[in-house]
Length: 171
Image 1 (cartoon, rainbow, N blue to C red):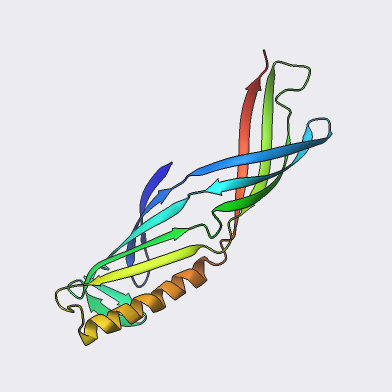
Image 2 (image 1 turned 120 degrees about the vertical axis):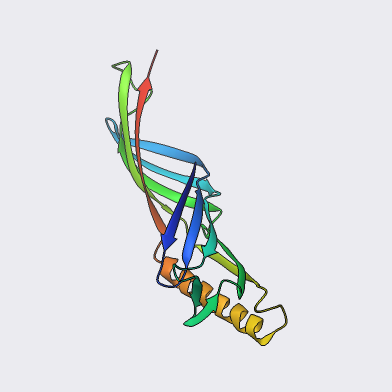
């Protein structure tokens, strides 16, 4: 699954490409009737690719400093789950192989602990702030500070909710 979207912040406009990629192994324990508790592991390749765009005024604000588009050649980043394999816990109703009717409704709700997201952010200095210049060094320092802000803002996103609704047909 892939989703492309723009997000405007007060400092930078980000164009994001969200790529969802998961594989799971889950064990269900049926306690009473169709009610079950699920435990499992989720292999996680979900990530968000970012590219920074200048604000409407044609500038970036990084760590409180203003830069023109010519100062910042490119601004790119990535956000991904902190854990490549994440634990899953859930509860649900429905047994796809139980006796009775051929058509069954399955419902599950749970959560994945993805850990603290891993954030990368990098800028290639532009023509107005060539590599090696004091302006380029300041830009790189401000990008690292902006990365720390993004990491802090995203640190609350450790748990991801999951809701599954399905149909099973038994022959």
